[in-house]
Structures are given as C-alpha cells and as structure tokens.
Length: 237
Image: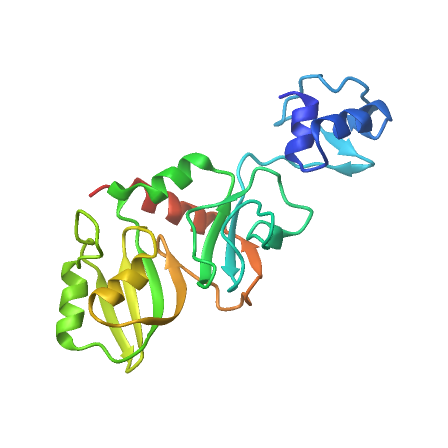
C-alpha cells in the first residue's frame, strides 16, 4: 500500500495534507524519516509512526452505535448531524452506516468500512433478523398479530415477509422483520389500523444492543460479535 493512502486511511488528513506531513518529516517508517509519500509499505510488517505515535492498521473496523433520535443515518449531511459525526474526529474516513434508521428512530446501528459484509447483511435473500421495540397507539388484537406474522399489504407489489410479534404489554411489542423497506415498521402497523408512537431497534443480525450504551454512544464489536454477524450474513433462505 502507498504510504500516503495508508496515512489517509488512518484519518490523518487529505491526500495533499498527508503528503505535506511526509515532506515535513512527521512520518517515520521502521524508525527512519520517510520523505517519499508514494513509497510502498507492507502494512503487516513495516512500522509507521506519525509524530512519534505508532499507527496500527486494521483493514476493517466495526462499531455498535446506539443511534439517538434526530440524527440521520448518513456519512454526511449539509443540515443535520449524522451517525458518522457521532464518532468524532478520530475515526477512519471510510466508515459508513449499514442500512439506515429513520431520523425519529433510535437504537442499534452498525457502522463499518467492510462493504462486503454490509452488502450481505442487507441482501434480501439473507433474511437477517432486525428486532424493533415498538410503542403502539393502542393494543394489538390477536387478529392484528396474526396478520403481521403472515405478512401485510403496505401498498407495494408484494406483501411483507412473515414477521414475528411478541406482545410485551398493552402498548408495546417486539417486532422481528427480515426486510428493510422504506418506513416498513410504520407502514406495517398502519396496515392493521394502528400507529407507531416510538420506535427503537434493539437487535440486528443476532446482536443485541448493549444496554450500557447511552443514546449517541458507541463501542467496537468484539471478535465474537463480528463472527456472529459474518454468520448472519452468510445465511441463505
């Protein structure tokens, strides 16, 4: 990998900025100052330091974010704070949200730079579980539950896939779906003459939202959690 590309992926600046850092002597490779930004390095063996700080390269990173209400699921927005903004200034520049949660929806959102895994997790044929805690306007009848679990008409060519419904109390359910259609949960409840009053995703791909994460907080996934997502993304049918 070129040294300047490596430095950019470490989020040290733009390509022109990191080239300036190299020319100014801020970067060493294997203990020696390096002035050639185009130099090829071995990311598995060469030791690269910026201003004396060793830079440890990882190809992929994975974060569990508890998305707060009012933040948009995007990498950048001209008017509103994004989920990537919540990571602060030290994050890698290639991180993006896997799928999206509506602006007024909170809960589990995966952030990563692993495009292949993201594609598999979002592919309709993988049937990856997404569990939502839903506050409803009024209690669901047994018939409503049956309709949701069989699939409902939300105004598209096909009905929704069968869902799973767990009634928690009079105004709260846990709804498990395996699709990601536009405003799907809200439209599903409208299909049974109800309304979503509050919506929170509490699980994705078998991972449960960490109860220790306050809205807006995030943490890296453990290797075991990443493996669980890999398995979820490999499932077919």
